[in-house]
Image (cartoon, rainbow, N blue to C red; front, side, top):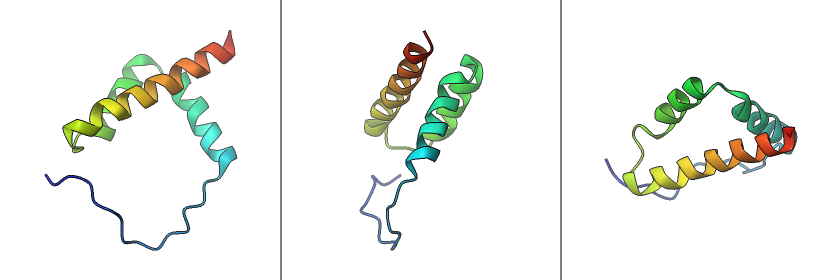
Length: 70
């Protein structure tokens, strides 16, 4: 598998902050088993050097959500 390359598509790169926030909240509410499966699906074909970064990102999101609920 090749490492990631600069994308050549022409999307505007706009982010819907409300949708992003909602998705992050849903991620933090997933049961551990479903979260682990989703994580494996996300990183299955990713270069190994990127896996740890992505895993840490989602763990941070889940932790932030759990802290907000306390």
